[in-house]
Length: 461
Image (cartoon, rainbow, N blue to C red; front, side, top):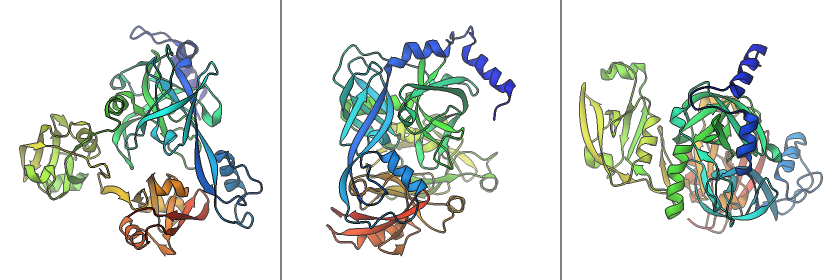
């Protein structure tokens, strides 16, 4: 809880003028730029048992979640799954007067219908131009002209402690405004290797996703994306995608409908103090190559296991999490200099980058790829298992195709497949490989405080 002095200081920071950049009052910012922030609602068809809850509210997913949380245990006789509409909500903002809107990929992912509502109550059906799950950025478009737009700022100029403002629709409360400060920059999250997140203490809740994060000059510096929470609600730690990272993705989505990323073909790990000493480095830094993938760009260029990458394309690699972002932002086919520490000496090696395959994603610890059924899974570490009070399980990081149609969600924990416990991604793949096409696998998942089985019907190999 902030002290009275800290609260007073924040209030002053949000309203006081300054000579550099001329910050404006938050109320003026909202009045001027709020009309370019939109409410997004989505509808998709999911399979549910109509007798799962005390009474049926098939089209309100948040209300269904309420009953899961507060009415645990058996709820009726079950029954066959039926297709029912489920609704979701989020935020977005207009970046061109002819109707292009930015939001989060997870807001519109799997939606059968996307509706955009403006502050003047006009409503439009939107088309999804493209999505990029790795950065959680999506571009949608409505058919309209002369729309209000927002000016984009430079996240690189943000300072830790600088005041910022968010506008969005938390819990469906449209055009809600919250304010806070930048807590940190360049944050790397365990499941996100391509985004140097802006961390803030701005109150962000379900429905804020995809809305803009403003500096006090009225410029968009980020897209509010996610929170860190132990109970599902805001707890003072929020993350936004820097707008320059988002726009790199947007430009590719608008021109070709997909995002192409550079690919190095290595598995890397962090360099700690002991490893730095053993390799003769002056301090812990860089990305240690733990594996070179056969026939990949790194292998062809002569990079080796035990090389420590210190610079990529002239930019210093301080942490291993820096490298995937640098490589991903580089153009496939380009030749870049890579400076490595090898056997106590610096060497510069030229690498011609490949293109990151659509179905795989390099991680600082492992290669993450889609499993059969449209799932991207990751293994939980000891701390995560302890926090969840589990002894095994796999986190659903992405869900597409069969998984989405079966009702599996990002954030679910998979405990077992056809009554076989799974604690590694490889174990999941082996069990799911034995399920014939057209048949269903019984997936036991933990969602919040409840466990439930979901039938995952496999449409292909």
